[in-house]
Length: 118
Image 1 (spheres, rainbow, N blue to C red):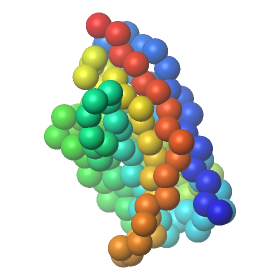
Image 2 (tube, rainbow, N blue to C red; image 1 turned 135 degrees about the vertical axis):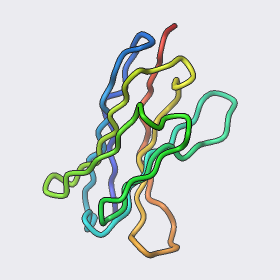
Image 3 (tube, rainbow, N blue to C red; image 1 turned 180 degrees about the vertical axis):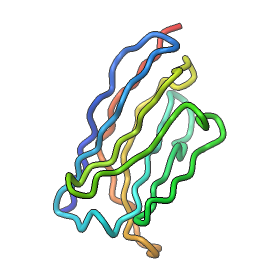
């Protein structure tokens, strides 16, 4: 079955940077839209960033100008570059995939913890 494996989560000071990676396998990666979600303690899971199969990107307002999503189809990997981190960015970050132009279910990774200390 499809596997999505996140990495790169860590403890970082406010103002710092992290790059998350999500390696996909058993998937036609290039024809899937890729997403980063996050879930903070006691809060609902939130869509943070999307990159479509065509390379179009979209971000939640709270991370615009600070986070950048990108993909490398040759490596079946999607990235989330996070700069100017704030304490409110603390969450478990999940990678998700859905075939482009589909309404099927998302595939999910297991998550990686990002903790920003103030």
